[in-house]
Length: 195
Image (cartoon, rainbow, N blue to C red; front, top):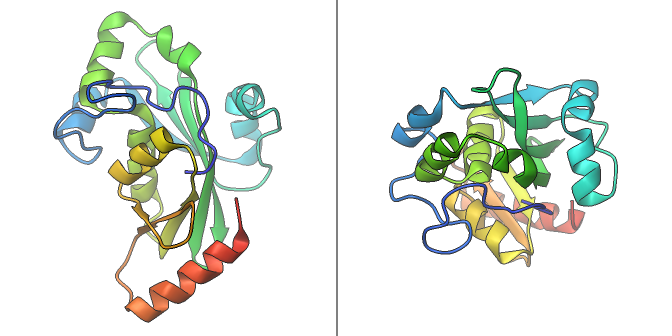
Protein backbone atom coordinates (compact mmCIF):
# COMPACT_ATOMS: atom_id res chain seq x y z
CA UNK A 1 0.00 0.00 0.00
CA UNK A 2 1.18 3.46 -0.64
CA UNK A 3 2.62 5.37 2.23
CA UNK A 4 2.08 3.13 5.21
CA UNK A 5 2.80 5.10 8.34
CA UNK A 6 3.06 4.26 12.00
CA UNK A 7 4.41 0.90 13.10
CA UNK A 8 3.24 -0.99 10.04
CA UNK A 9 3.00 -4.25 11.88
CA UNK A 10 0.35 -3.88 14.53
CA UNK A 11 0.62 -7.52 15.28
CA UNK A 12 2.82 -10.53 15.47
CA UNK A 13 6.54 -9.81 15.52
CA UNK A 14 7.71 -13.39 15.03
CA UNK A 15 9.95 -13.56 11.99
CA UNK A 16 10.92 -9.89 12.27
CA UNK A 17 8.90 -6.70 11.99
CA UNK A 18 5.52 -7.32 10.48
CA UNK A 19 5.76 -11.09 11.01
CA UNK A 20 2.65 -13.18 10.74
CA UNK A 21 1.60 -16.16 12.75
CA UNK A 22 1.74 -19.40 10.80
CA UNK A 23 -1.55 -19.93 9.07
CA UNK A 24 -2.67 -16.33 9.69
CA UNK A 25 -5.61 -15.68 7.41
CA UNK A 26 -8.26 -12.96 7.56
CA UNK A 27 -10.75 -15.30 5.91
CA UNK A 28 -10.43 -18.25 8.24
CA UNK A 29 -9.60 -19.28 11.75
CA UNK A 30 -7.40 -16.30 12.60
CA UNK A 31 -10.11 -13.76 11.83
CA UNK A 32 -12.68 -15.81 13.72
CA UNK A 33 -10.32 -15.88 16.71
CA UNK A 34 -10.49 -12.09 17.02
CA UNK A 35 -13.88 -11.28 15.47
CA UNK A 36 -15.10 -10.27 18.93
CA UNK A 37 -12.22 -7.75 19.18
CA UNK A 38 -12.12 -5.99 15.79
CA UNK A 39 -14.20 -5.14 12.76
CA UNK A 40 -13.67 -3.34 9.45
CA UNK A 41 -16.09 -0.67 8.30
CA UNK A 42 -16.35 1.62 5.31
CA UNK A 43 -17.06 5.24 6.15
CA UNK A 44 -18.22 8.27 4.17
CA UNK A 45 -15.86 11.24 3.90
CA UNK A 46 -17.19 13.21 6.88
CA UNK A 47 -17.39 10.22 9.23
CA UNK A 48 -13.91 9.04 8.25
CA UNK A 49 -12.53 12.54 8.88
CA UNK A 50 -14.09 12.51 12.37
CA UNK A 51 -12.86 9.02 13.21
CA UNK A 52 -9.33 8.98 11.75
CA UNK A 53 -8.61 12.52 10.55
CA UNK A 54 -6.34 13.30 13.53
CA UNK A 55 -4.40 10.05 13.04
CA UNK A 56 -3.93 10.78 9.34
CA UNK A 57 -2.72 14.35 10.07
CA UNK A 58 -0.31 13.07 12.75
CA UNK A 59 1.20 10.46 10.43
CA UNK A 60 1.08 12.24 7.07
CA UNK A 61 0.93 15.94 7.99
CA UNK A 62 -2.09 16.38 5.74
CA UNK A 63 -5.87 16.12 5.78
CA UNK A 64 -7.64 12.88 5.03
CA UNK A 65 -8.68 12.56 1.35
CA UNK A 66 -12.12 14.11 0.90
CA UNK A 67 -13.31 11.54 -1.64
CA UNK A 68 -14.29 7.85 -1.36
CA UNK A 69 -13.49 5.12 -0.26
CA UNK A 70 -12.40 5.01 3.39
CA UNK A 71 -11.88 1.77 5.35
CA UNK A 72 -11.22 1.58 9.09
CA UNK A 73 -10.26 -1.39 11.23
CA UNK A 74 -11.62 -0.78 14.72
CA UNK A 75 -11.14 -2.34 18.13
CA UNK A 76 -14.69 -3.01 19.36
CA UNK A 77 -14.23 -4.98 22.60
CA UNK A 78 -13.67 -2.03 24.91
CA UNK A 79 -16.96 -0.16 24.62
CA UNK A 80 -16.92 2.58 21.99
CA UNK A 81 -15.07 1.47 18.82
CA UNK A 82 -11.45 2.66 18.60
CA UNK A 83 -9.84 3.02 15.15
CA UNK A 84 -6.59 1.04 14.88
CA UNK A 85 -5.87 1.21 11.15
CA UNK A 86 -7.04 3.09 8.06
CA UNK A 87 -6.69 2.76 4.30
CA UNK A 88 -8.05 4.78 1.39
CA UNK A 89 -9.01 3.30 -2.00
CA UNK A 90 -9.74 5.56 -4.95
CA UNK A 91 -11.99 4.18 -7.71
CA UNK A 92 -10.07 4.06 -10.99
CA UNK A 93 -11.03 2.39 -14.31
CA UNK A 94 -12.97 -0.45 -12.68
CA UNK A 95 -10.17 -0.97 -10.17
CA UNK A 96 -8.97 0.84 -7.05
CA UNK A 97 -5.79 2.71 -6.17
CA UNK A 98 -4.96 2.08 -2.51
CA UNK A 99 -3.01 4.47 -0.37
CA UNK A 100 -2.77 6.31 2.89
CA UNK A 101 -2.39 3.17 5.01
CA UNK A 102 -2.09 4.23 8.63
CA UNK A 103 -1.71 2.24 11.83
CA UNK A 104 -2.30 3.85 15.22
CA UNK A 105 0.38 2.31 17.42
CA UNK A 106 -0.68 4.55 20.33
CA UNK A 107 -4.24 3.22 20.33
CA UNK A 108 -2.95 -0.34 19.88
CA UNK A 109 -0.71 -0.04 22.94
CA UNK A 110 -3.74 1.02 25.02
CA UNK A 111 -5.52 -2.28 24.39
CA UNK A 112 -5.54 -4.74 27.25
CA UNK A 113 -2.47 -7.01 27.23
CA UNK A 114 -4.58 -10.13 26.66
CA UNK A 115 -6.37 -8.56 23.68
CA UNK A 116 -3.07 -7.41 22.15
CA UNK A 117 -1.74 -10.95 22.61
CA UNK A 118 -4.78 -12.46 20.86
CA UNK A 119 -4.46 -10.04 17.95
CA UNK A 120 -0.69 -10.64 17.69
CA UNK A 121 -1.25 -14.40 17.67
CA UNK A 122 -3.81 -14.08 14.87
CA UNK A 123 -2.06 -11.79 12.39
CA UNK A 124 -0.90 -8.27 11.57
CA UNK A 125 -3.58 -5.57 11.95
CA UNK A 126 -2.87 -3.92 8.60
CA UNK A 127 -2.85 -7.30 6.86
CA UNK A 128 -6.31 -8.03 8.25
CA UNK A 129 -7.49 -4.65 7.04
CA UNK A 130 -6.19 -5.26 3.51
CA UNK A 131 -7.68 -8.75 3.35
CA UNK A 132 -11.08 -7.49 4.51
CA UNK A 133 -10.98 -4.64 1.99
CA UNK A 134 -10.43 -7.21 -0.76
CA UNK A 135 -13.65 -8.89 0.34
CA UNK A 136 -15.47 -5.55 0.52
CA UNK A 137 -14.49 -4.61 -3.08
CA UNK A 138 -15.62 -7.68 -5.05
CA UNK A 139 -16.58 -5.50 -8.02
CA UNK A 140 -12.96 -4.48 -8.65
CA UNK A 141 -10.85 -5.77 -11.49
CA UNK A 142 -7.77 -5.16 -9.35
CA UNK A 143 -6.49 -3.31 -6.31
CA UNK A 144 -3.26 -1.36 -6.75
CA UNK A 145 -0.73 -0.04 -4.29
CA UNK A 146 2.37 2.10 -4.63
CA UNK A 147 4.88 0.97 -2.03
CA UNK A 148 8.48 1.76 -1.26
CA UNK A 149 8.87 0.78 2.38
CA UNK A 150 10.10 -2.85 2.72
CA UNK A 151 8.10 -3.75 5.86
CA UNK A 152 4.93 -2.35 4.33
CA UNK A 153 5.60 -4.30 1.14
CA UNK A 154 5.93 -7.56 3.11
CA UNK A 155 2.51 -6.98 4.67
CA UNK A 156 1.04 -6.19 1.24
CA UNK A 157 2.50 -9.34 -0.31
CA UNK A 158 1.10 -11.50 2.50
CA UNK A 159 -2.27 -9.83 1.94
CA UNK A 160 -2.50 -11.11 -1.64
CA UNK A 161 -0.70 -8.40 -3.59
CA UNK A 162 2.12 -9.20 -5.99
CA UNK A 163 5.00 -7.21 -7.41
CA UNK A 164 4.84 -5.96 -10.98
CA UNK A 165 7.60 -5.08 -13.44
CA UNK A 166 6.89 -1.42 -12.64
CA UNK A 167 8.92 -0.04 -9.71
CA UNK A 168 6.87 0.33 -6.51
CA UNK A 169 3.61 -0.75 -8.19
CA UNK A 170 1.92 -3.78 -6.64
CA UNK A 171 -1.36 -5.38 -7.63
CA UNK A 172 -3.96 -7.72 -6.23
CA UNK A 173 -6.00 -9.15 -9.09
CA UNK A 174 -9.63 -9.61 -8.09
CA UNK A 175 -10.59 -11.53 -11.24
CA UNK A 176 -8.87 -13.51 -13.97
CA UNK A 177 -7.92 -11.60 -17.12
CA UNK A 178 -5.93 -12.45 -20.24
CA UNK A 179 -2.25 -11.54 -19.86
CA UNK A 180 -2.40 -8.83 -22.54
CA UNK A 181 -5.28 -7.11 -20.76
CA UNK A 182 -3.44 -7.31 -17.43
CA UNK A 183 -0.32 -5.76 -18.96
CA UNK A 184 -2.35 -2.91 -20.47
CA UNK A 185 -4.01 -2.17 -17.10
CA UNK A 186 -0.63 -2.33 -15.32
CA UNK A 187 0.87 0.14 -17.80
CA UNK A 188 -1.99 2.59 -17.24
CA UNK A 189 -1.74 2.23 -13.45
CA UNK A 190 2.02 2.80 -13.57
CA UNK A 191 1.44 5.94 -15.63
CA UNK A 192 -0.64 7.38 -12.79
CA UNK A 193 2.54 7.65 -10.72
CA UNK A 194 2.49 7.61 -6.89
CA UNK A 195 -1.02 7.61 -5.49
